[in-house]
Structure formats: C-alpha cells, structure tokens
Amino acid sequence: MTETTPNATTSTSTTATTGGYVTVLWDARAKAGREAELKAFITAAVTPSRHDDGNIDYEAHEVEGQPGAFVVLERWESRAHLEAHLAAPRMSELVPAVLELIEGSVEDGIRLLRPFRPAH
Image 1 (spheres, rainbow, N blue to C red):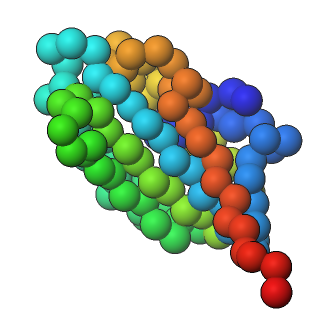
Image 2: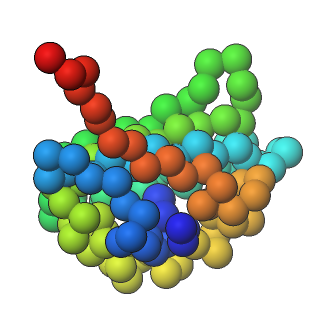
C-alpha cells in the first residue's frame, strides 16, 4: 500500500470499500517535542478535507492517555473521491511537512476498514 491520509496517494488495489463508501483510519504519533505541531497540522487539514467533493466525514481525535497520539477517521463516497482528495494540489505540500512531525511513515498508521455483517 502506498501512503494515504492525510496527505499522499493511495493504491486502488488496497482500498477497502463496502456499500460504495471508503473508510480510512490513520494512527499518527508525533516525534518527541513535535506534539503541538502535529495537532495543529491535523487540525488544519480537517476543514479543507471536509469540503472536498465526496467527503462524508473527516474527524480528528487525540488518544486519551497517550500524549502525541492522534487518530484521523475519514469516510468517502467512493474510491474515486478518496483518490481525488489525495491528488489535490495541497497534498503534495503536506506529505513532506507531516513526515517531519511523525514517527515512521504515513502508511505505517493507515488502516482501511471494511464493515461486515453477521450471517442470518
């Protein structure tokens, strides 16, 4: 899988979809001393992302009891909408910036979610 949320590209072969929508969960941990910067970075990404075509939900969370740990939950109408979001011009500037703030890579924290329903 290639990097995704909040600011990179995605591989269509690894994007989970169900019911026509795509859900992405990104866990990010700030480098030591960069916690406030990462929180500000994530906060700044929320509003523009919510205005991207096809965005259903874009939420940012802090993990309780884990300073510097954040989770971003995104839901998109379709894979094409997610890919358009990731291809937006602003994303090419965000990738290098976020890599300076987080431990590991963006893709290390990406989880693509697929709902399931119990059999009847």
